[in-house]
Image (cartoon, rainbow, N blue to C red; front, side):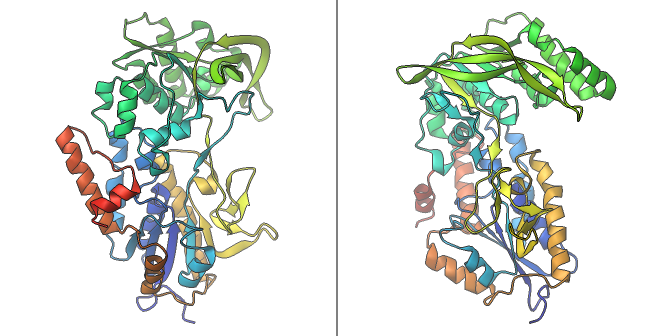
Length: 465
């Protein structure tokens, strides 16, 4: 059989997952100077963009503008989008092998990491990932409910997700009404009784994962005062030594900003953020089956042999009276049917994007991974571009070595016919462009960036199907 990659016989690639990694990989593939590639981007959701649509906070519209670059990729005539098509349900690994030379998985990290403490599953304790998906209008979460009638809440973690959740809880309804937050979430947050949020970090301010712009934003919320405890933001000797050694100006500025919050007097705003450091939850207490409080242990920092600082618990405990908990300690990937998976790391078993056979640890011909399902949930949106480039470089190297799948029906029409048969309700790129146009038009009428469709059946109805 002729080696694929020519005009007569293009290299046919299926990308499973239409988030940033999927689009970046498609961009790299379609721009290859010598190999002719056709890309089908397949996602189980009706809409593209993944976490840009369903993970980026609604009050951070500028970050979402990255989709303009993805739209340019989608305009390539050798690109197709099949939304509302689920791998493992509508298409199997065997189906893909029959129609594509290569399959790239970019499904991200779809669930949360657990803390592993007593009471974690009490009513009123939620994964932050679910709250984020809910307020962003993710179709899987539109019917979720969150108890926002509690006056005090705790957000466990100091990463991007924790900061986003904290901000959304403390924004006024008027602020949120100018965003693309899901309508039902806006109405629920209008009725929220949350007035105080504790943001909890297990290490010190110098080790906090949030960026300086994020902490500045938290410190200047129109409807919430922000503060911290002076004794918790004073650097310990180990952190001082580490900063003296690295002279990291960004971290120094971060510490300065946080210490400034601790010294700031109250501004009399209706809501309050209290940033806590060197504390970890060890147990949630209950009243009538609902969260009534959180027990914290105070930590100290100790240096490891690798030079990093880790939190070590002391014998000092504290009870925090909160009725609402959001656990934001990280995302985790989920296994895909028939695809080797590393359960310990929560990623597809791979080496630099090549999927590995778990028995031999040798690459599985034609199977690849990129993004969070490849490396774990690290980095920002842009981090996925070089990550995808690494995987695509290996894909192209394998094409040069004639190490691909050998599809029996590689024509573009064959898989489209199969998808039409298996999932008549699939969404094309043209369908999405129409939905996007409608969302933006609805937003203009309401003075918002867009008003999202949040249910698949409403999207289909808007398309006349």
